[in-house]
Length: 429
Image 1: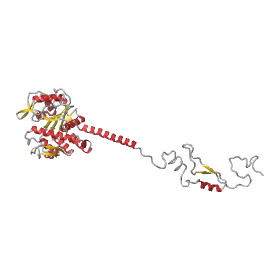
Image 2 (image 1 turned 90 degrees about the vertical axis):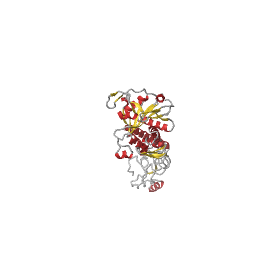
Image 3 (image 1 turned 30 degrees about the horizontal axis):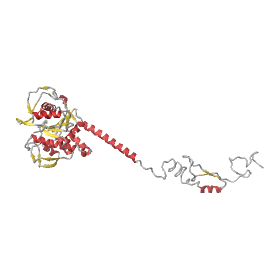
């Protein structure tokens, strides 16, 4: 007897069901269809995962066949669909590389970003250094206080002054550098540096030069002092009212407009020399001067800060006194500038920063002078030392009362050539 409802038999129960018997006796347990996860054919379309294949379980033997066909391959080891070698896994269509090999490095990209990083660091360092150094400049000289100034010409004129300032020096420093302990400060050397398009010219002004003190306005008092035609040594102008009167006196006696003022003291000079490891110079003769501390043999040698200061201050051991002394000062300062303005110093932070710090700590300039102007001055002095310019003393015609008298005709010609930025043809003799 058929227990199934009418019309329902083994043959018409639909494809959704298995093929069991319709008899009253229950059928035996059957194995469900299994999913085969073994390797299969690659997908037909990009990114489409392989579809699972099925084993139609008719009995227990089909389960064993499913295992042998790869059903359990990788399953017991923890691998999942899309594992190694499969779609979407490493080495698959969506991974971006094959065979487990890393992509080759993009060297162009790396070089590009390295270059950008280096340039950025250099720019930031350079800008920081500029503002650091510019901020250390002591802009203490106000040239706007100088009255009745000559008209400015072509090129740039620097008045460079070496003072005997002992500011910041200990008693031991003064003894070591043979500076003495005099109060105040005086000019120990004075030079005019002209920079222009027809060669740079460095002109020493002997401290014993005979000059007239003109009318001037006191730098501190603001009072006007009328000129009386009084003549004195050039360095007395500085001692009387400082840098502003010195500039006023130089301009009045030469007719040359001074654009910038630069002053450095004893300690700063010696420190700069030491910071660059000493300066090599060819000393023209044996020198022994107990007052300056100089004790040198003739010939080429490297001087440290203490020795360099003694060399440029020496005057009593020289036959020509102040004129020979100014020649030695020119020679040494040009050699110093030549050594400072080299790649070995400028591009080496371990030399550049100590050198700049040593000089800037004791350097006094005018209020309008910037770091760029200071750099131009040093490179111009280097050019003079290398033969691209001219160095000379102010032309002298004689002396009066122990003062050196300038040759008025030659001085006038020299000043005209400097004003017009022409090549200087005037000689010192």
